[in-house]
Image 1 (cartoon, rainbow, N blue to C red):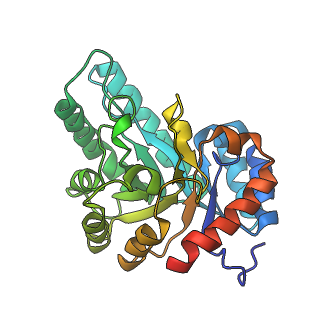
Image 2: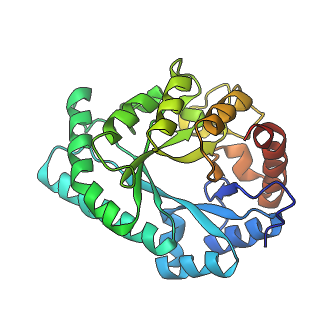
Length: 283
């Protein structure tokens, strides 16, 4: 159980941060470290089984801050569109069973051979219009994640918080929302205004933190580092998020070979201390 005098009441461990752990191990490790929430990736949920995963978290006295991930909505062929819609409906159902209202959406990159970014973004908007009513009925938000521009071709055709908010705008706030992920948006000169906008529109559903490490490795996904190891100003971004009215969990999501190779309990010890030093004072 969590020690509520510890300052960790809003901290969440994303299961990718301790990538070698099974879901059961992550639940046990988080509980030992006094971390009250988990951000779950669907691979770990599927390994355990959705119902069992929900019970594991619940029985440990923890909560699920988000489910990663839905999305990949840019297919242009009928079979690809149907597959994406079916998988996202399954992900919405899983989020509801797990007790989280946040399904993080990585919207997808360009289909093979396609160079039309505007067209791909239009297809994302079309798929969201089909999925939003289903999500709303399930009590789940489709939480759009803007990814760093280096991923625009292969992972997400939306690169800024402003683009994510524009896509969310036609939909009810309890159906489509956004996440602020420090790794992906720290560079944006318009970030402060867009975080303010997200708060004013009631669409900020999640806050994910990790650092941006240099040099960028060959697999750019693995540049996600421990807070304090890279170039991100967590104080400024966290103050923006707090000023915009966000009171939810702060989820640490790290993709990094050195972190993954380390002892997971030591990773959690470092993570909780860096959170206390770099993020918590500014919430």
